[in-house]
Length: 136
Length: 136
DNA sequence: ATACTTGCAAATGATTTGCCAGTGT
DNA sequence: ACACTGGCAAATCATTTGCAAGTAT
Image 1 (tube, each protein chain N blue to C red):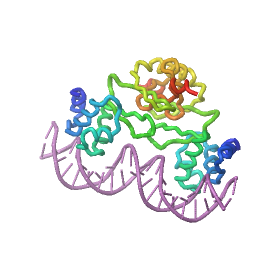
Image 2: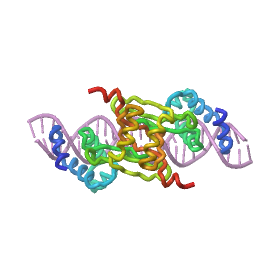
Image 3: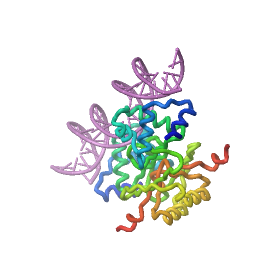
Image 4: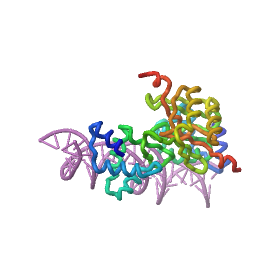
């Protein structure tokens, strides 16, 4: 938290109460949350537009990241170390968040075959999970 | 084209002129197109709502598929054989469409590590492409 | 003849923007 | 003080839905 505030100051951005609330909400969450959910958690003390503006600012300086897991609203979470990447089952909808290093083999294969340094932080890997493949 | 019409008939769905126009537009396109673009290509002979309704119907019976390559509108293309999967560079925005089999090694790695049968037809693989990695 | 489809208008959901008052530095 | 921010309302963009009229089978 202090680190995040430090980054804001370094960038000449203000540490406003709204920004504090958004950050608190993000630090409290264990899963990515929609702007709407973040606004709610602050007891609606914040306007949705402000939440969006702050999330955008925080994302621009690298504190926040957002992911699209499906057709719903974008979901926001803290960026940086311990960042998770996502797999989603196309059939049952289950979302699996994994530590980045577990995807290193996959990343390596993609780099070898296509030259891309892949990231599954913005869009998940979509597929049929083991449980659903097993079913008839 | 005839195959697509056949599927519609099999499903008890009608072969309307609007449906024909949407299909023609899709067969003519070499890249995924937005509903808006598809409507335009028919000379706006079709209402956008009808285009969306038809795309949804065609997708439900497996003739069409849509992909989200970024933050813009969803993009529609024919499904079935010769279906492409996508890679997008997070830096330069370049979109690369590849034949499904070129992603088989990647799919194999993902299956081995996570048990998922992955598909990059709905969300692309996002990463930094070789050209952009090379730059400072 | 009947049920599926269409166009048009209006509704919805997510996100953005304009503007002026408020506040952090 | 001054520029950055916040709230509020309205705008925008993508997509969906209601409904009465039209059309494929």
